[in-house]
Length: 117
Length: 113
Image (cartoon, rainbow over all chains, first blue to last red; front, side, top):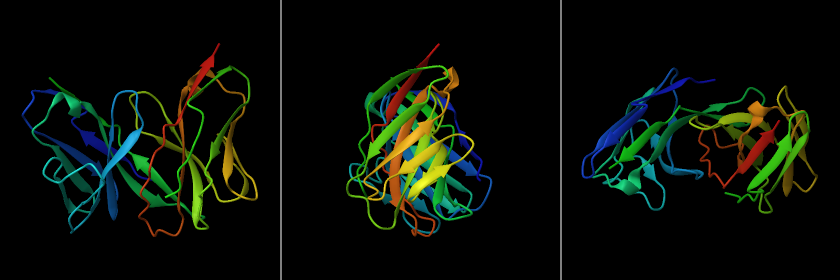
């Protein structure tokens, strides 16, 4: 299993500013994933962060808008840059763990609720 | 990655059994089926995972027919605390620790007194 913490838990920001969200895992993991969940919607994968290499972004997400750092095997940050009200969402990080008898399981952080005014 | 289809919402009452069916017609040989549960203001939580036939744990059962083109999550005797969104996902079990999850719309289950 994995325990994940995120900071901040919530924030209210002005448009045009940037916010960096931190994700800390209690064990070393190869991949970390960043998701966005807009109000009342499902989760959308933003990018996958592998330690020591550039993050891989999904269609519709770009590095200039959502730069990601992955300095070590237990930590990652996601920055939401030049924010607009459309960026108001919950941002979640997750990690994958192999299950004992096969298959994988993902563990999610509690999320960061971002409101952009 | 196989696309999944599930009902948008379901209603039930306390003590009843709830079955949520998920369709995944394009499931690949290496794909396994996983269900996650999400409460408001929390991240999704793993419920159950299977590859074929039936899997049961302390929380739920997962029924997978031979063709694996669908699966059914069964929640026995639901309570109010089972009110949540349930997501069905398929993914490669041999991904070696890298399994990109693509979430569908999920099923919003409401359990009534």
